[in-house]
Image (cartoon, rainbow, N blue to C red; front, side, top):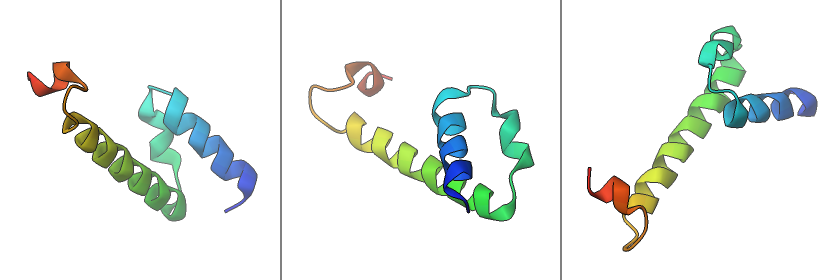
Length: 60
């Protein structure tokens, strides 16, 4: 994957709340985004376990 395309995907992943762009990914790009999704969810899970952090999440 070209560096420019990866940077474009990073921008979309971070800044674009509309996820229609995900439907147009090739298999390599989709795998990369799936990995980022999993890493993001794992990060959120770990943050929710830090005492005193994200109290709103802990109360849900």
